[in-house]
Image (cartoon, rainbow, N blue to C red; front, side, top):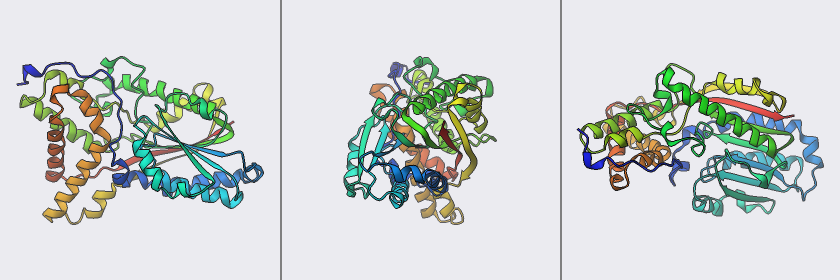
Length: 364
């Protein structure tokens, strides 16, 4: 039975952020770079005459929406910059990194980044939700990029009661009827995201989006992580360590839309007169950690190391959300939740594959 002394409502604002080591453990997410880079190179080749004519004092702007600390896109951006400078060697580059996390992690990354070593490359970090407008770059953006980000819902524009459920902690776990409200929420947020980007992009500018997506069969991205987290929270509830209110309020505020939902927004309103969808590809990137050791799980040390890594990965993107659901005096349970998550991965090793819908949008 739940502990009645721990029945205070949790904080009523979700601001999910990545932990400081997110960029060091997202190998699966970074694997998409090798797939999206050729698309960007092809685009750059198509606008090569325009790049060649750009004055060296007019920067070529690129933005990373949902950048975390900037590490994950750094190799991709470095390759893009090399392509641009092969066309126009003296062209200045302005990189804009956007995330709601504090900028200290970005500052640490940038200080030692190879990107920072070039006199032609400048960077700016903007601590703001990517659903908001960015007048700082309005009508100047040449390339916008986002990877594994836009499944996060905008938590500022809805009542807190949306993020409450007694049985589940994530929208894709819900039955279809209950999930509908999150589908509608994601569609509204997706429209806002695209409209704001249309203001920032120059004519002919491009968005390259590696969107995590639900491709069916109840195997949405990292589903084992979400399901194990849910089960760990239920165990603590039945042991009386978290309250009814906490269990109901623990929610990761994201939704993995289907590829059809993503494309329908681009077809069914005035956005179809703003963007051309030049490519959309669906793919699954196998879990980088599970794939390496799946044939060696009879080795207990290998199995334990995999469980540690998977629990660490899940904690990186979920901890801030889980903490939001816990009462202030009960934050100590967070370590127990992730220890139980690690144990579940040890007892039943499962990978965390990422399913993607890769979209290339060109502004008219």
